[in-house]
Length: 128
Image (cartoon, rainbow, N blue to C red; front, side):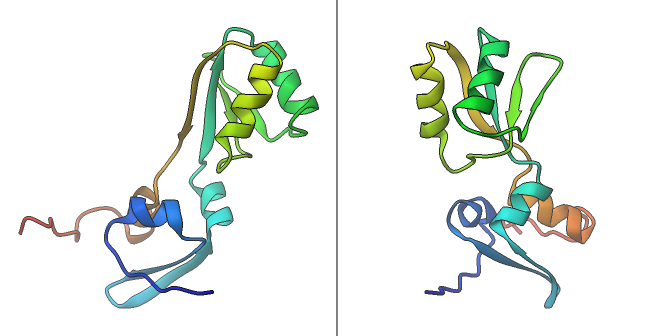
């Protein structure tokens, strides 16, 4: 089923749509899937635990992914399971890992759109 929604509330669209058509000044500038958008926006699950090494093992062995990056501050950026935080949290809890932070982070659809059109110089405030 296809439903066409036109909106300036991009964050809500990002949470519900699976395909996007970006339009600027009446011209289509890009057609993109939610999968490709997540890759380009570097969306990820930011995981902070008390045992980084064990967390890495759980990601690799229990969740069968190597699509993550360990950051210098100890936060793990997981690029899979973006729509399934519960599975990630469950796998970590079952392995007795204390999770101190778990959230989806990265650029938003609005950030991506603004980067495609060259910034905010031509964007009008809804108050005007």
